[in-house]
Amino acid sequence: MNTKRLFIIGGTLVILTVVGSGGYLFWNLNEENSILKNELSGFQESLRAVKSILRGTQNDNVSLVEANANLSKNLQGEEERNNALETQVNDISGMVQNISGTVGTLQKLSQTDKELLKKYSKVYFLSENYIPSRLTDINKDYLYDPRVEKKIHAGVEPFLIDMITAAMRDGIDLKIISAYRSFEEQMSIKTGYKIVYGSGANTFSADQGYSEHQLGTTIDLTTSKLKMLTLQFEKDPAYAWLIENAYRFGFILSYPKRNAYYQYEPWHWRFVGLQLAKRLHDDNKYFYDFTQREIDNYLVSIFDR
Ligand SMILES: [Zn+2]
Image 1 (cartoon, protein in one colour):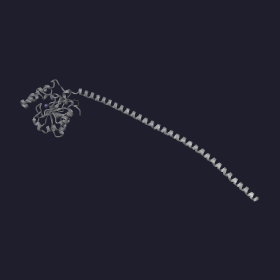
Image 2 (cartoon, rainbow, N blue to C red; image 1 turned 60 degrees about the horizontal axis):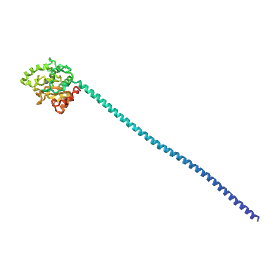
Image 3 (tube, rainbow, N blue to C red; image 1 turned 120 degrees about the vertical axis):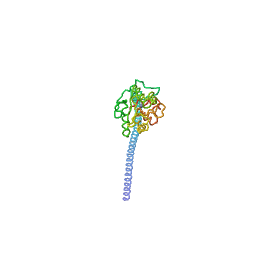
Image 4 (spheres, rainbow, N blue to C red; image 1 turned 135 degrees about the vertical axis):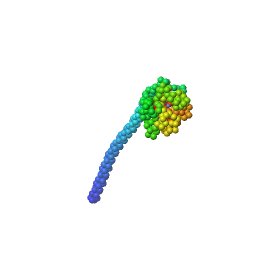
C-alpha cells in the first residue's frame, strides 16, 4: 500500500513538475515573442523613417534637376541674346567698314583724273588746256628714236615698261614712236602725217586721234624694222603679240579695223587699267563699244595692280 501511495505521490510530483516547467516555458516564449514583436515594430518604424527620408531626397533631387534645367534654359537664353548682340555688332561693324570702304573709294575716285577713261569722239574733245597731272620721261631704251624725249603719264609708265620688256622676252621688238602730245604738238604734227599718208591724214589726225595722246596714257608703237606708223604693223608678229598680251598690262587697241568711230590704227594703244582691259578682252569688245557709264566703273581702279 505504501509503495502504491509513494508511487502516486511521485507520479503526481512528476506531473506537477512537467506541467510547471511547461507553463514556465510557455510564458517565457510568450515573453520573447512580445519582445520580438516590439523590435519588429521598431524596425518597421525605422524603415518608414528611412523611406520617408529617401522620398524627401528624391523630391530634392527632382527639384535640383528642375532647377538645373531652368538654369541651363536661362543660360541658353543668355547665350542666344549674346549671339544676337554679337550678330548686331558684326552687322554694325560691317556697315561701318562698308561706309569707310565707300568713303575710301569715293576719296580715291575724287583723286582720279576723270578724263583718263573718257571716250573721245567728234562731239567730245579734250580741252586744249588739258595737261596730265603727272608726266614722266620714258626710258630712252624703249624709244624708236632715243634722241627725241618722250613723256608718259607717271601712273602708266610702269605698266608700259612691263609690257615692252615682256614683249622683248618673247622676242618681240616693240619701240615707242609717240606718247604724250600736247595740244600744240598735235597741231604741228598734223603736217608730218600728211607727208606719210597724203590727204588721208585729215580723216584721223585732225578730227580725232590727238585727244588720246593728250591724255598721256596713249602710245603709238612700231618695230626697229618697220621704222614708222604704218598699216604694215598689222602683219607684224608685234601686232599679234599685242592683240594677245597687251590687256595683261592694261593696254587696249582704241581703233580696231572697221570700227564705227575712227580710222583703223593698229599701232595706237591706250592704257585703261588692268581690270577694264581684261573685261574688254574677255568680252571680245572694244573700248568704244562700251557706254561711258560702263567704263566709268573702272576709273577708280585704273592704276591698281
Ligand atoms: Zn596714236
